[in-house]
Image (cartoon, rainbow, N blue to C red):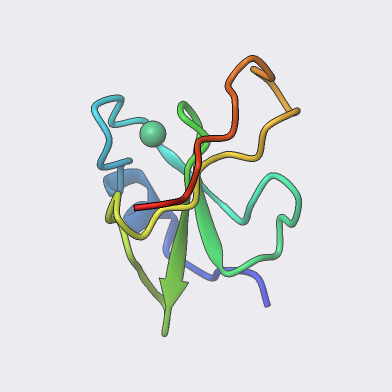
Length: 78
Ligand SMILES: [Zn+2]
C-alpha cells in the first residue's frame, strides 16, 4: 500500500536532518512503500500506522550506487 498522506501534511513535513528538505512518498526503489524519502539526502523514513516517523535514528540511509557511489558503506558495528 502506498502512503496516503494529506498533501498539505506532506508540505509541512520536512527531513529532520540539517537539509530540512521536503519529503516524497515511497522509496527510490518502491514508490508504493510505506515510507517517506527525503528529496535532498535520500534518507527513508518509515510510516507506522499512517504516522511518519521522522527520526534520524529511524531513518534508512540512501542505498549506494544510485547517486553518489563514492561513499563507502559504513560498518554497522557498535
Ligand atoms: Zn534529508
